[in-house]
Amino acid sequence: MYTYHGIFLWLPTIYATRFNLKDVTSIWWTIIVTLFQIPGYYSASYLLDKIGRKKVLTIYLVGAGLGSMLLSLKTDLTWIFTFSSAISFFNLGAWAGLYAYTPELYPTEIRGTGSGAAASFGRAMGILAPSITGYLFATSGLIGPFTVFSLIHIFAGLSALFFGIETMGKTLEEVSEV
Image 1 (tube, rainbow, N blue to C red):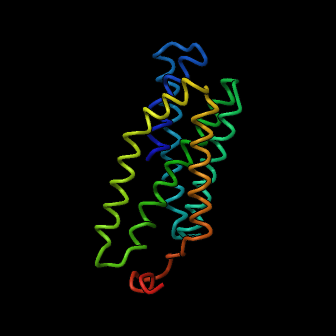
Image 2 (image 1 turned 90 degrees about the horizontal axis):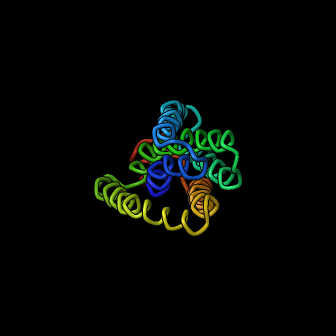
């Protein structure tokens, strides 16, 4: 939630201030970029039962991280739009994976508590993200906040890859025994 709220609440301002776009134009660009979330979410949802939750989560988190890293290095509006769209696609696709995968990891007795605690922490980070992003943007331009977004995405993707367990095709009882 940190990366989502940090990126998409600031994107109109980034477009307006870095590229001298009018406010209305920067909002339209942001709307177009956020439309890439729809195929990202649905493609990840489709792939969850085809290739597995762990793989989907890894691919989409690392994809969003690479998009964030590339965006931090570019100053041309066309590339910024391209990488913003890639981030939008992969970031929301990762959410589809997280919503399906993380509840399956908790034993039945604490599934609601575990999922709720994780969501609460995410919401807290989502609240802090716009302020932290604004500070980083003001002190270091695009490279600061998008480097942080990149590192968070890639760290989360690699954590899923190396420490996650595959839950596809397993009952919740089987997952609880692991």
